[in-house]
Amino acid sequence: MITGANTGIGQAIALALAQAGADIACVGRTPAEETVEQARRFGRKAEVISADLSTLEPVQRVVDETIAKLGRLDILVNNAGIIRRADAVDFSEADWDAVIDTNLKSVFFLCQAAGRHMIGQGRGKIINIASMLTFQGGIRVPSYAASKSGVGGITKALANEWAGKGVQVNAIAPGYIATNNTAALQADDVRNTAILDRIPAGRWGDPSDLGGAAVFLASSAADYVTGHILAVDGGWLAR
Ligand code: NAP
Image (cartoon, rainbow, N blue to C red):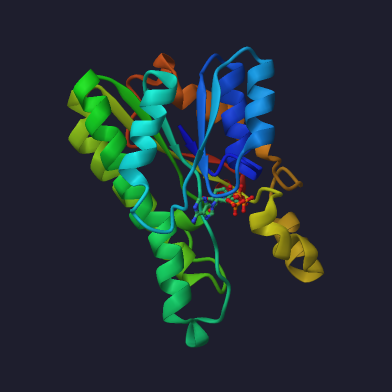
């Protein structure tokens, strides 16, 4: 089950998992028809599940629907997320709540709902999508930095609790990836140049750059890897 799989990083991860042999449930507010169509070409089952993850209302339903449609739930990728930009002195309560609710609160309760099922079956993999702002403060995105730092925290907290129950909980921290989420940065010549100058790889990441890390963390090759935040960042954090 992958949230926000209609576009960007979520779509790329969903397709990488499908190519590696997973059936996929694409959970989100925009139907992931294109993703599902492509996954079926890999010979996998693929289903669209509609849900707006800005509240907890759909959380248990999407887990139940995934299990009903695919027959099982072994892997959860919490990818859906939003960002709001404003100077900290002007930052609104609405922008604070919107980002924290989608990026952190829904992520925790999706982990909980999927985790209960995975603990029951004695195995499972949870992969949360973190960020460079799990480690750094960023510029003009305080609620996003707080939410993604929180994602790092709950990833480690759940890994501790569930390591003995066969459920591994890890995160992937993408660097600067060319998607809708970063369209404003890519379009801003000053920020775009500053970002590119600081990436050792010398280019924006492509969503497909995240596929290998997701397949690894979702596989039995990572059965002894838990509580880890894997940066896929072209060297950004090493600099
Ligand atoms: P994106 O293209 O904007 O995709 C975000 C996805 O989340 C979309 O599928 C979006 O659905 C979904 N989503 C947002 N709010 C939702 C809601 N309330 N209910 C259901 N789905 C919702 O951005 P992206 O870059 O691929 O981002 C994916 C994840 O990676 C996010 O968690 C983001 O914070 C993280 N990330 C991105 C970067 C980067 O450089 N791009 C770096 C670090 C971390 P709609 O299409 O319907 O809006």
